[in-house]
Image (cartoon, rainbow, N blue to C red; front, side, top):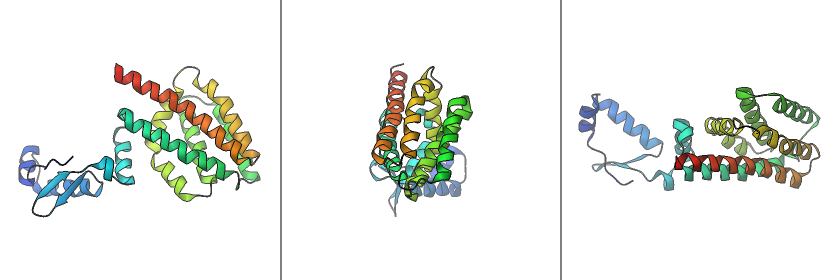
Length: 210
């Protein structure tokens, strides 16, 4: 952060592309929070961790979610707990009869699915709960992280025995939602997510050590 990029002409020559392509690339990186352009001074690497936007984070997540550094992974998991626990609590105010049937169907699919089908079902279940919250921003934020959430879910449930140990937690969550018990639903969602978070953080640490 703070380093100045070489002049556009030099970058174009080094990369073997046109100067206009370099200019477009710089403007796109600026719009996504990775560069700052100062008139008559040049382009500089931005401190995106401090001044980034949701678009900046979305780009990072989409680029290669399997290689997130540990600190960013931990922050994402903590943020997910914050959003989804509140969403589960709020959802209890809005659940209707049709939603109860949908939740039961999700639970059945989770218990019977495996591989990619399980990963997609779990993502859809959590997305559905955020939609039930009545807060469109919660839902949009959750869905903006679809790529990394799918990757993290796959990493978690590829491990032997993880579905079996997590299934009772999902059953408790669904029962809490159906009972319209906000406090219970919040605690149940926290149990689901903290179990996944602990596993993924340990997996990430193991990868770093290797």
